Picture (cartoon, rainbow, N blue to C red):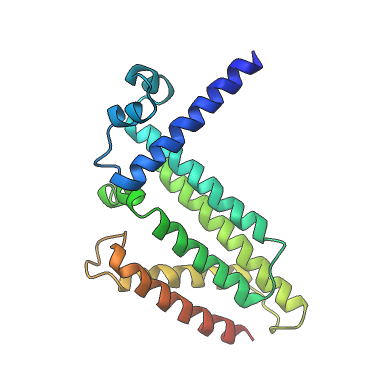
Length: 204
């Protein structure tokens, strides 16, 4: 029984990996279930056995990517060197995640006004992990006396993350869009790095 379950798990992982590569190179809109099945030398019927439609498959891949992203924060949690290190880690890790998976996120551009609740749940998990890391860094630095005591670290982190979002929106020509074009990512990143300097100095 366990061997059968393991085989199913392995096959599911193969599907997720192949789908990620397809979505990464061609985007969600230009990828079909037929192509994914062909990449895996698998029948379309078997692919649908694991995932009933393309959107369900996409969300499963998104969840896998998010889990890998969250693991980076978990690994970093007990290895923060200072406040600036924590803020840089959040901004750089987020930037690299978007850049390295940019085509994958065309699903967000297509559905930005109507993202599924499942996707919003994943986004919330990511924000919670980022918040946890930054709050921990602020508390740790305050305890060491490196920054002045902070009464409301959660509020400060909320302001910081909201400011990061504001930089993204402000850097996009089309203000109604929620997802930036690739050519704007470096500009957004540079401005966010400047924001880190302002925040860290303000807390010292």
